[in-house]
Image (cartoon, rainbow, N blue to C red; front, side):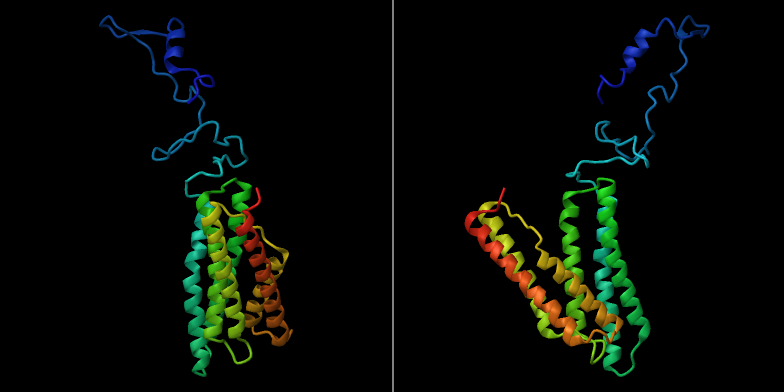
Length: 266
């Protein structure tokens, strides 16, 4: 703690030695009453919590929450929400598979379909929630930067693969070519990023507008299957999502090849 900001207890004790009231104990020793517990006017923390540095703690924030630098190794609330989203992925896969199995048996079990959609929606909303918390309270962390995109990719790929392998109806299913195209694009993009990092020691990943459109269309396609909609028809939904998925993959491969040869931009 900076002594320039808070006075030293020993200095205060010596400076106010004459001004402090004293009492005679009857044995020749003079004692002073103990100093007030709030003489430094510091915020109280639990005994098992490490008090953050004054320069880092946002004690004047509306919620009086400590704000840590972006590289803080602490487990933030935003990171915990991301971990919850990761835990929801296998639950969604199990529910969706159970419903697909009941459809194949000729006895669709609707509670499993509704539960799978609820879990998928909760996971999607948690993505927006942890992002808002990280920005609002400056809870960015190195762990969160890694886990957040991985959770999004795992959720999307899991839904595509499960709905392709275990269709929910004859009309509402994810075609094999579409699921394979999405998986292939993500695998090639990951390999390209690793190759660039291995050669240059760093890599710069900039989202392309075609990738953003592809993500939106992929979510719409998944919603079309899970909600079992009849409009627009499947020959419009899947090809549109597949077209932008292919286009974004080509853009990422071209950018990856440029960075591999010339190096990432500064």
